[in-house]
Image (tube, rainbow, N blue to C red; front, side, top):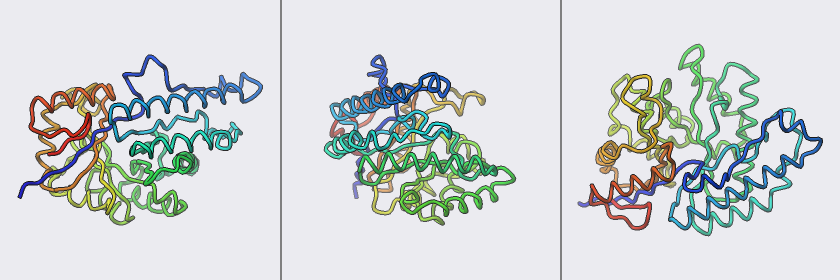
Length: 318
């Protein structure tokens, strides 16, 4: 039997091709309080939404079907001292952006930063983490897209891994159902390996996303990914699974966890060969520092080195 899988490539947050256009802007709390009103914040938010729209147009033009939204789209959205009802101001804009996403059948997710630690031993950190997740949920809900997803790490291992998992379960169960339905867990590069994360996701009945680079960094038990990939994909049930892929900055121990500008094509091909027995379509988020440029460099190399059948600029059949 000939196995054929459709694989789509995507990238995260910043678009290098459009970088000179400065599409995403930040605003610090210090600069925010220098102004007497919310005009500056409003202007930054509107500029970011326009930047997001430009990236979506670029993605549509280049048949990029998978994209990670900037979690800092709305600066200071979760800052405890900023009292600004940003959501009521941008509902219509988000709805329009969502319609565009649906028109071009794009898959969108988010990935909160390192300050979102749901299993922290500090109640203040947990409280802030839930606030961050609620913010992400509100943005995704107002886009009105199907299967919105928020990618999380399990988090801290304070006290022990087993205690960290118990804290995660306890705090996860405090979230509202709408938010729970959005969360996907990712194996990390230091603490919770793919086996830990898979078991937790199976218990919570939520999807797990395999980060292949993290798997290489955090695999002290010499786990073989071929023994886990079918169970990983099964956590997605009827939804198309997704995978994160990046390459180490170098083979040096101190740089191995850092992301390279581009993707090592030989490692990528080796990975695809390892899991192609699964016979299932999936998406791959390219997490290289050169973003879309790295994606298209990988495509050029795959076209040269393999017989993959490309059906558009970023999608191919194995």
